[in-house]
Structure formats: C-alpha cells, structure tokens
Length: 297
Image 1 (tube, rainbow, N blue to C red):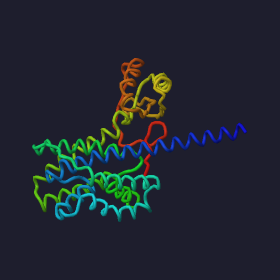
Image 2 (image 1 turned 60 degrees about the horizontal axis):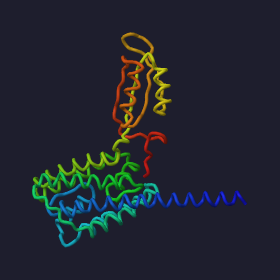
Image 3 (image 1 turned 45 degrees about the vertical axis):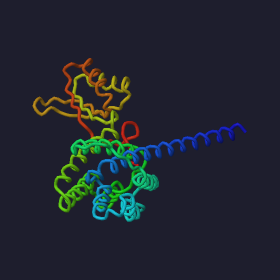
Image 4 (image 1 turned 120 degrees about the horizontal axis):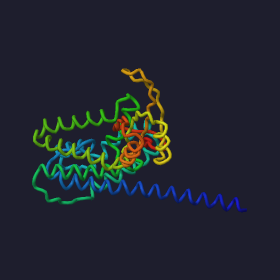
C-alpha cells in the first residue's frame, strides 16, 4: 500500500514538473514574440526597414503587397518549411515551434504600438535591441518561432550546412533584394539593426553562462587539478605534452567552465603557482550534461 502511494506521489510530482516546464516555455515564447512584434510594428514597418530571417522576407513581400499583413505572409512562408521540418527536426522541438509560430504570428497581428523615435540610426539600434531580447527569450525556450530556425536545422541535417552559414546567406539575400528593389540606405540601416540584434541575442541566450575553455601548464598541475575539482567542482582532463624547445615532458590541464567562474579559477591557480601558463578561449558551443548545453532540435 505504501509503495502504491509513493508511486502515485512521484507520478503527481512528475506531472506537475512537466506542466511547469510547458508553462515556462510558453511564457518565454509569448513574451519574446510580443517584444519582437512591437519592434516590427512599432519601428521596422514605420521606418520601412527590413529584418533578418523570414520576418525580413515577410516584410519585403509586405512592402510589395501592402494589402497583405506581415503576420499572414509570415505564417504562409512557414507552411512548406514545417512540412519539411516534420522529417528532419526533433518532435519536441517541432511541437514547440508550431506553438511558437502560432504565438508569434498572432502577436505580429495584434501587437500594434507606436514607438516615437524619429532618428533612423537610433531607430535601428532600438529595434535591434528589442528584437535581440525577444528572439533571445524565444531561443531560450525548447522551440522557436519557426522560419529560418527550422530551415537552418533542415539544411544542417540534410546537407551539413552550418547554422551560421544558412542564417548569414539568407540575411544577405534579404539585404540584397531590399537594396535592389527599394533603397541602399534602408538596407544599410537594416544592417545596423541586424548587427545589434545578433549581439543582443547572444547576450540574452548565453549571458553569464557562456562557456570558456582553459588550458593550464604548470609544474604544480596535480595540486591545481585537485583544487579545481574540490573547490570549483569542475572536471579536469589531463593531456600529455612535450616542450618543443626544452624537450621536457609536460602535463597539460584542460577545463571547460562558465564565464562567471573565470575570476575564481584565475585566483585559485595563481595562488598555487604565480608562474603558471594559462590560456582562456571562447567556445562556440559545448555539449555535455554537466557543463554543456544539449541541442534540442
């Protein structure tokens, strides 16, 4: 009887946890979509700017056919992409992205605001910050708002084209046609918007959780590795090396830590060996249960 109650309790807890996860992801998508839509309807359209991704393509088509709203164009553009996405992306990511598409398209249609910024360069900067924050919140969820995110994953899995290459190529195409059919000035302002947006997205998505890889060469490597594991609770990989000039064998420590832990690591290592040789590098992406972030697509 006790085992049955325990099983029921665990089932209820698991169900409650799943509900919290779903609600949290829906909240991220909703808030992110509202902020992005405010940027599109409050700045980009009034200033006749373009944008990145499928939103940019939808804006281009809207400028050609003003009678059709951006939200409808965006939703229609995603139909063939999601049809392909069913075969190439993960089911959870696909399901959340369907929801994200509905939320974002609805927000584009309903969030109509007026943002009184007259200077074009300031408008591009503000739109970039707003879109970066909104897109970052959406990307922190388990899905996306569809569009270029889904297409990039399909191209990666089908043709091994990196995500960055797909996004850069598509955005260059949007800028090219925008400058060709409308004006080069608007394309250049859009370039400012895209740059600020990409930097803001990185800040929102990674923030202080950005990973750094560290290489440490020291005669006191044993004590340093032990202290890192005991005090920072991070794993250490020991690599065997040899100095080209001295011919001396060296033990090299390799660690991956978060940005917030860098100062602690430097203090720890310097206290043990003031003459330590240490290299700290940025990481594009880290996969792993303890320190990495698993792709959810």
